[in-house]
Length: 265
Image 1 (spheres, rainbow, N blue to C red):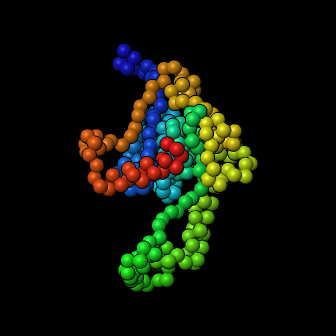
Image 2: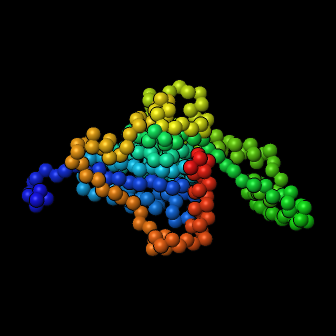
Image 3: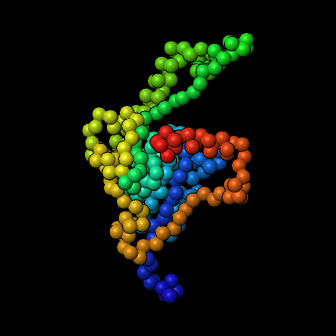
C-alpha cells in the first residue's frame, strides 16, 4: 500500500544497463553510442536512481564507439550526481574494459577476464594469390595515402609505419583514459598496458578492478535489502527473437564470436 500513501518514502532503486557484445563491429546486435543513447539517457532520467549498475560482458571492438559510450555514461553521472558501478561477467577486455572505466567502482567474478589494454589492427594480404591467378590489380588515386594497406597490393614499409603511428596514438588515448579513471588504484606493473589480461582477483591486485563481487549483493550492501532494480536495454527485433538473422547480422555474430574466442570464451 506504500505507493498509494502521499509523501511516503519510496524504496531506493538501482538502474541496470546491460552492455553485452562486441562494440561497433557492425550489425544490429553490436554496441554503439547511437544504439545505446536512448537506453543510457532513460536509465539516468527515469525516477531518481540511487545508482547506475553496468552489466558488462564485452571482448571489445571499436575504440571510438567505446570512447563515445563511456563518455556519455560519465557525463550523465556527473550531471545527475549519480554513482556508477560496473559488474563484469565473462570478460571486459580492450573496449569492454574501456566501458568499465566509466564506472566509479568495478567489480568482477572470480573467473572474469579483464584488461587487454591495447589496440590491434589485423587483415590479410592477397596479392600473391592474385599474381598466381594471373589477375592484375588496377588502382587509381588522388592522394598518395588513399590506397594505404590495400590487401591486394604488396605491403609497403611506409604504410606499416603510418599504421603503427595511428595505433600508438589510439593506445595513448586508451592508456590516458584508464589512468584518469583508476588513478592511484593502479599498480606500477610494467606490463599493465601491453595488452596483457588478468583473471578475477588478480585484476584487483594490479588495480584494474576494485573487488570481486556480484551486482545484487553489492548493491544491497550499499543501499539496503529493500533496494529495487530496473533494467534498461535495447529491444530485440522480432526477427532476432525468433532466431532469424540477416546476412549482415550473421557476419557480425561471427566477428563477435571471434573476439570472444581470443579470451578462451
